[in-house]
Image (tube, helix red, strand yellow):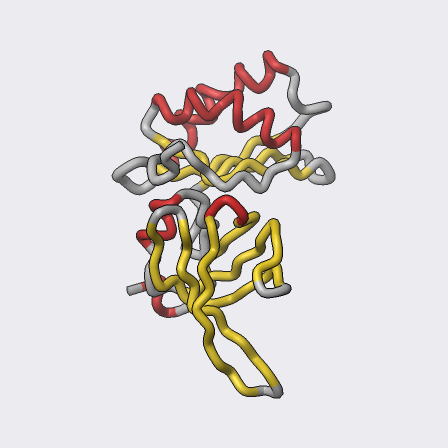
Length: 174
């Protein structure tokens, strides 16, 4: 499978969240949007759907339009156990990176990353995106030993990334 297209997405979701994203993703994509993340907060009774608009910025009218188009599907399929509130939003500046294009667009930016498998006996890294090719992330990882900071390049297959998030810094506002 070619994961360089928009079909592949890192899905750090519960089974309920995955069920919802699977139901609504075709509707959302047909309207020119991509799902970044679906999260359910059962305690606060909120279904949060983070989207991005293909080739444009997401605005409030987009959020209203998507909400109106997916609510009947969510209600009809009875995927949430009780009353809930739906929040549709953009992923924000310090967004999650979930598709190959996200990594390519953020070369030179810093990220925090959690892996499904250990690489060099670790599952969590922080560092700068050096590159992304053939579904492999090249990360210039920060290593701290005895208060001395050094860097090490690590190659990470996208298939073992559980979560990758941009670190908010001045670079993101340039």
